[in-house]
Image 1: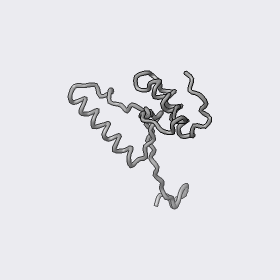
Image 2: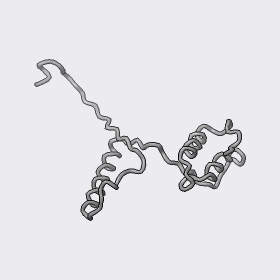
Image 3: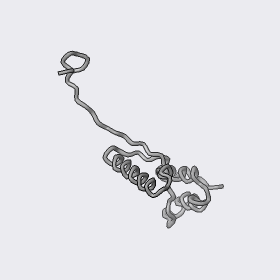
Image 4: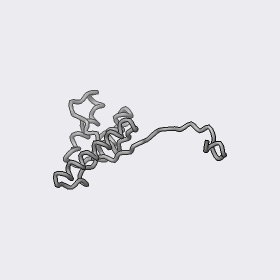
Length: 114
């Protein structure tokens, strides 16, 4: 596949182009999607949707916890209906970050137990 000189393509579009190349399958990401993005240099515009597929999703606790609860509820509903709950999974890998901190006044001393 010849895409031409991409050295002048903005970095953000290079990232999107790399993503398209990684996931090209001729079903969800087709050759014309790749050529449309690479051709942006010619027209500086495109009517083609970018078939972006993230490699993973990073969720913070305030958005991730409700998503985990929703997944659990969907799995429970599928199991109750007689289906296989193991089939209910995110399509992309998900990392959930729980970012909490605790203030400690005392540690490794008798005062820590008070």
